[in-house]
Every structure is written in structure tokens, then in C-alpha cells.
Image (cartoon, rainbow, N blue to C red; front, top):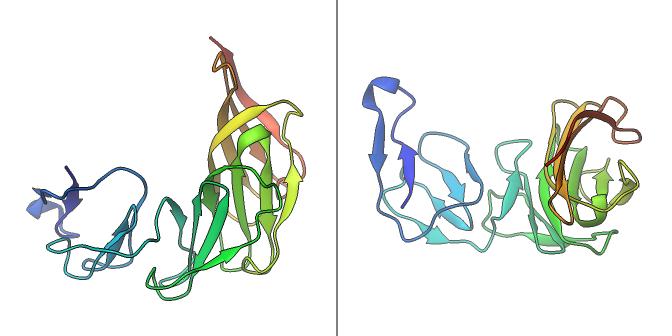
Length: 180
């Protein structure tokens, strides 16, 4: 079951679209055109078709987007119609991706690894293991090319962590650390 905004105007509210898919990331570049977990619409969600591009996504502009799926990084320049696989230097599963601009992007994943590109995904390199311990990093978000946040849990899922960087991922400061 998927619920989507039918209009930018709040007075029209929400509409149940009764799709056979859901979950994952959602990105709409305008009122009519959007992607959800490997499906695309060009008519505000009335019809959807599979594009095999989805997972965790980040779109730094209207057509250029990046996605992680398993141990892969994918790039599209035509809003998901076609994509190319990029190098993942960590060789590990990547759980999320964030591009604050068209050149700079970050992804996070297993073993506490973060990877970075500064040339639109042509080359990726490992930036850091923020705490030098094995975390599943689940979510990453950068507000600009230097300032970003990452969150995750230990492999035993007994400790949660939320960290911040102000130097492009070279160093991370713990903002929240909760053994549970």
C-alpha cells in the first residue's frame, strides 16, 4: 500500500494509490514524475512502471541520481530510465547514499565504512570508519559537501550511534551514543 501526495497544495490532502509495491526511498522531481523503490510514474502516481533503479536514492539535480543496492552503487542521468554501475571501493553492502551537490557524494554501510566521491561518482574512495568499530551504518545525510550525519547500530544491535562530520567525513564526532 502506497500513499502519495496528490498535489503540492495541502488542501487536496492524501490519496490511496493501491499499488502492489512500497517501502524504500521516494523522490519526486515535480508533481507528476517520481520514483519509489524501482518504480517510476510520470502521471502523479496513477500508473507506475518498473525501471530497475531504486533502493536508497539521492538526486542532486532533476535528472542525475545515485542509488545503492547491496554492494553496488548506480548512477542515472535520465531520472532512472538507464543507469550505470559504479565502483564500490569498500566491497561491502552500502545502506544509504547522500549527494549534497552534483559532484560530491557519500554512502555508508557495513563495518562502519563510509565512501565518498568528489567527481560525480566517476571515482569512489573509502573515507573513514568513524569509530574504528564494526557498526551497521544505516543512514547518511549531508547538508553540504563538508557537513554530514550518519547513524547506525553495533552488529549485536545493543548500541545505537549518531555522528556528525564537518570536514567531509575525515573525522566524526559522536552526537548520540546509546547502549541499550
